[in-house]
Amino acid sequence: MTDRTPLVVDIGPLRETHYTGIPNVVAEICDRLLLEEWLDPRFVLDGRWVATESVRRCLAARSGLGLAEGLADRPGADAIPDDLRAAGTFDRAVALFTDHRPPRRTYAREGKIVYDLSMILAPECHPAGSVAMYTADLAEQVACSDVLFAISEATARDLVWIYGVPPGRVRVALLASTVDLARAGRVRDAIAGRPVEPFLLVLGSIEPRKNAGLVLEWVTRHPEVLDEVRIVFAGRQAWGETFASMTDAHGLGPAVAGGRVVFMGYVDESLKAALLVGAAGLIYPSLFEGFGLPLLDAMATGTPVLSSVSTSMPEVVGDCGYYFDPYEPTSLHAAYLRLRADRASGAVDGLVARARRRASAFTYDATYRVVLDGLFPGCAGGR
Image (tube, rainbow, N blue to C red):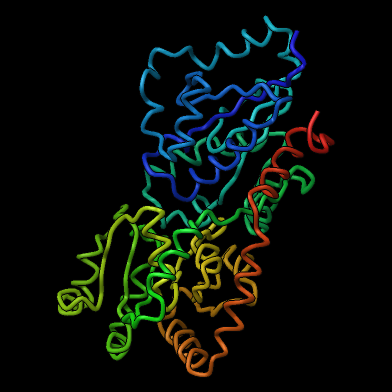
């Protein structure tokens, strides 16, 4: 009989080819749990028991491309309980579900990470099929989880409000930035005081929830802004109206052709860091977030943020940014004018310094500690 404690982890988000957002969160947690000598981790993907070495390789590459290789030949996840029973450790087994989970219990203690409840509170921001799939048995998933890890106080409040979850079953595990600060520093050194044409960066996939249309409406109403700065959109085309059709609908074809409005599509983590360093500011117009990682990335690199004052985003930004109503282009313009005035006066330097300090207080070590303590109450750093 082994003294190691079994931990079964469903790693669904790690199947993504490029790790951003949620896959990065799951990767950071898995990196740390693999270092725990008192744990016996078993990984599950798409109902299959994944080899630990395959998980290590994908974590090192920050890509799930290799996870699919040979997956069909792996044992089913239902073989894990039998294996643990044979080892005499089933009664001590704990499970962590990093996204969806079966609506029934299997192990002695089970936890689930909840990123946001936008599928319920803002279904218009998602494809109807995704909403139906995500919410089909979500109440059962919540009910059979011993502990729920919410990535913000906003998400924790939503869990208590919508499902009546006792607050004691919810742990707030705030996230952290994974922006490549070394890359950002090299870019900053390369710029080294050279003049860079100012641009505002809009980070996020093109989909209704990310609300890129607000920014396009703003520059349509205030075309003089495009004489001062370029507007650069970076993020994959997800679902809903395409970026090209949105710019055409706003009559921004000439601005796109002239390079005043730029759509870069998906950018990797290295290019994201470079863009943040060069940007005069980040605009984050999202309607609904579970956390708001791009805001923290910008703060960590010293880029001023213009943030939607919605859901979890004020928890991230605090008093270190410029807020606007995500439904009002006029409000965004007022935030932009405040940033412009603070740049002219030099006041933005103090704000950026505060933002960097605030960003540094968010760490994945702290995130992981909340998750570990929630799964193993009283573990106090190990067994």
